[in-house]
Length: 281
Image 1 (tube, rainbow, N blue to C red):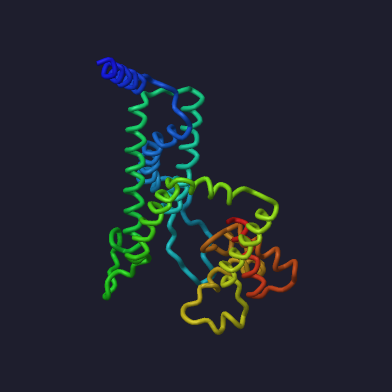
Image 2: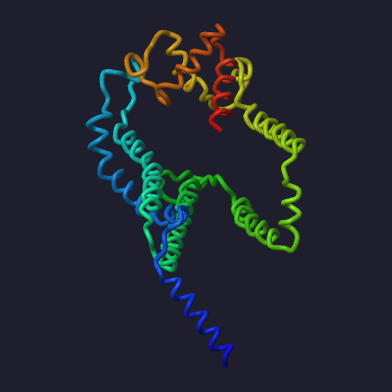
């Protein structure tokens, strides 16, 4: 009888703790603020994109290139800029919640986090279906959609995290992995060498020369990217007598390097852009 009473008292105490408001942790505030921020940004994209784009980002006197016409997309540009504000908005919400010590019952906070995580999971599923041309597409190839990820890849992606979690919960596995992952000078330099090797191997196909481009099979999109850099080397100015398709400022970086080395070739340009890719990654 005493043991039962003790258990009931513990349960009652746990319920009171769950219902007692407490200050949110930064991680909890991030999850709770994720869904409202996403909905607010989505509403801004839908409602503010057209007026902002047509007012501030409409086409002026510049053209894509002399004698070449393109369809301007000011609404799309405005909506992209608005979408970029989502991350700073969420960061501001987290900072405000922590500084103001916003409190919620632990149970309420847990439910709100679960709802946000479920919504994010559903959004990722929609993105995966859209990438595979299952939804949100008006194009249907005669042979059916061309999936980016096959069924085996999706099953492996779902199974590997579960296997990793099961392995980490086994007795002694986590301790052995921690011992293997302990940092030492030799391991640090080895990991750095492996990372550099993998990065170079991954990006090496991006480096091309006039010969490799000439012998490439299929469509070649590199001239479209190179036009921006070589237009600047030709004395043109983006948004004045040349309208870039992909970037307005990056071409200056590549053009500066090509002008400095005095070798405006495909090989030098691809090396520069591959180096930029490594630095951004």
